[in-house]
Amino acid sequence: MVRFLSLSLLTVIAITFASSRVEASKPNLLGTFGQWRAYSFTENGNKVCYMASEPKTKVGNYTSRDDVFALITHRPAEKTKDVFSYITGYPYKSGSEVTIKANGSNYKLFTQDETAWAADAAADSALVNAIKSGSTMVVKGVSQRGTLTTDTFSLSGSSKAYNTISQECGL
Image: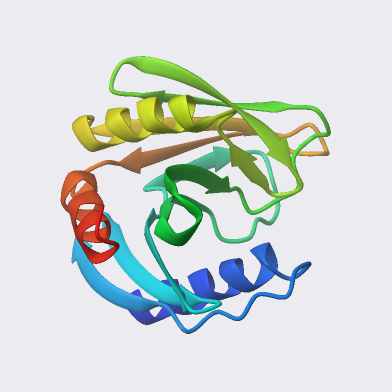
């Protein structure tokens, strides 16, 4: 599973940066913490650290769907941290939003293609804090075909994974 997840995440990284000239090394697994894994890699000579998880359950009336990941990324060289992104495994409906419920709070993310993000650094920070202190995260989105999906994540280990990536990136 770890090897598959590492290869899948390498694919996600390749797809995410396909449109730009980015040279990235293979992700290095820093550890597995409950349902979360912590990684680091080098991108254009700079360290990037991220944590990732896959949903425990995926519900929706679809026939096929690619891999699904929730990620939190630090890029100290770019002075960014706590960037939350969601890879959904299908193209989102144009102009749609993703809703997340974590630790009793609700969040909205904007979408583009197969990825969703928080609107700004403050929203990222609030969502990351909810993930670190919560037990479950529920993510809902709508595909370009109009299919509603509901993905449920365990947040077990998220705080330890977060501490690991923060330490690795010197934050």
